[in-house]
Length: 534
Ligand code: G4P
Image (tube, rainbow, N blue to C red; front, side, top):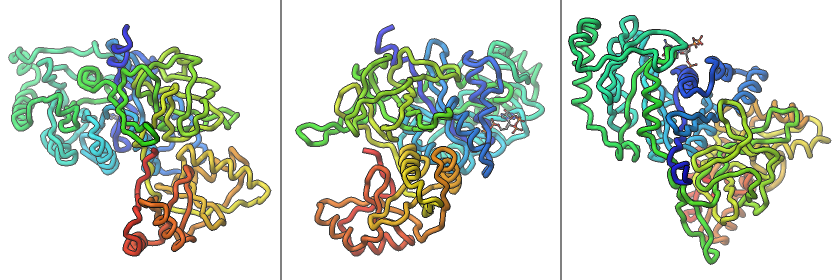
């Protein structure tokens, strides 16, 4: 197979949903259909602490299992499909946003009874900002749910883009009869059963109207009516519009019964985009110049979108998840971390086939490669085999919750510093070092992040800390057009200045008016609620 066809046959997507819509179940069925796992239920095991919990064992379990299963690779119809899971809990939404920067498309799972729910809405926003193509799966049709037209209407409103039905349900709940596949013009007859495979289902061509009416009577007739209404009201399928994030294909089914899932897998192969180009900056005569990196470029380039502590007893190991943007990875190749110009010396390199971590033999653009290191790699780092470039666009959000870290035993200062540096690099929490000195500050987007960090500091670094509330309620990263303007601002608010893990200067706020007042006083300073790793 040529280099170009290796990249073209890859599909890298994230699966997003509100908790309980059926993401775990669907993931498992996708893997089952592709033959990646034999035992249904193994993904389920990962779903440990979904609902806010302070049970440490549960959090550990979730973190541990997710190392193995947050990235899954499978082969289907001669395509390599990389599936990236997104954390279920809203307190870890930052992780989710970063995962979304590493994919070329998203699969959105919706509970047909609940429609588009809060958490899905936030994820949609991120996809929309990036024009990520979205495939929609309306799940749980075997339950008493809402009318498909009604759901379509809601998805359209929430997504702000037209829906194009690809399958259409016949009946629902107890009288769920199956789905009409509008692409193949055939009805697949529903039968319940958890272990069913794709070819277990009976299909009847839609042209065989007599048989369909005889067997499914009024359910079929009314499904035809609503389907005609839906397709009449939707635009025709426009692949380019889907790729531009302006149209979403919609599929109906029942994940738990493996029903309607195959159609989604086929859509990923047939409709979802192969790896896309990525924007980077490179220095030409010391000036930053924007450069598009194409998947078929021969040089290796990738970006770290997730760093996770290993669950092995030797906890200093960390896995850096790198989304490859171009080139080919082969074992033993020399790679460099662009930020530090240091060589990346992984102790092991893995891909995520079949839910097991396997030593990587080769990988291409679109693939996720896990490098186990002892440090030296941060979220957002660009890894190349020599080329001088940096990827942009990995978001860090200004925290809204702050805590001061008080070390219980001052003799453990070194361990605390090491722990905070590493947890900061992982993106588990944001660490701010006040310029005037004093205790470190932790910034989070969700409360649960503090609990995890406090626990991990003790468990992994033997640094027992107390977290205390403080007056800060927000932060803004600051920049200015000239060093003199920045200096003037820093001198005006010395007690409010702090450096984050990447040594970027931030202004700490105590109220929402803070930024406004500071901005009025210093109109030339730029206040950023989002820092993109550059
Ligand atoms: P999540 O990852 O999005 O949170 O959802 P998950 O797959 O865990 O599914 C949430 C619940 O919905 C599970 O029930 C699951 O069995 C059920 N479910 C998923 N897909 C379907 C479907 O197509 N039809 C029906 N009727 N139910 C579905 P649970 O009671 O929480 O767990 P379990 O005891 O069934 O394992």
